Length: 246
Image (cartoon, rainbow, N blue to C red):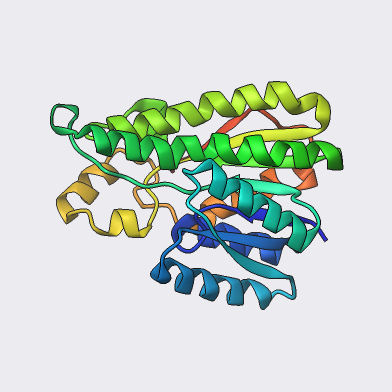
């Protein structure tokens, strides 16, 4: 049985990815931030995943910290025996115009969104090399492609992920490891639920399909990228935005 490790999988897009990969037949390692509320959410996600007849376990780690990631990767490997797919999904926002943004808010978003991807790929790639196969999917954003006012920290972190994805694809392709990214647009998540109705309407005016995407629609593309159907796809960034860029 193949194993998928998904970071930030206690809710939102990460939870949907975990459930979709469980439905696809993967055993799933569900990472959550070390808090009681996140742990409870992760346990509920794991229970849903097990309904597909697979093994699902939760793993607490602050993925912005290398030591936490190191301990988690070892625990996942010990529990499941392999890590066949890695989905780097963990992310936060601390939005503000650059003129008003605090340095600590910039640093926090870079640490969680971008440094975590380095931590996880650096630790998981050696595992995949020994297995002689592996698939990595990094969750970027349209903000990393086009920028977004009030999100200089978030946009920087998501743009960096794109560069990292292409670099790792080149470095590890000869080891039979693929590395791709998805760039979601405006997706229904707890992050978007807090936006004002006026802002939501303005955002949707730029989307050709005139609606928000659903987390399940992101999970479907991730499902493809970690499947054998995508065995010759690497170094790509797939925008999932309902036609935002057209």
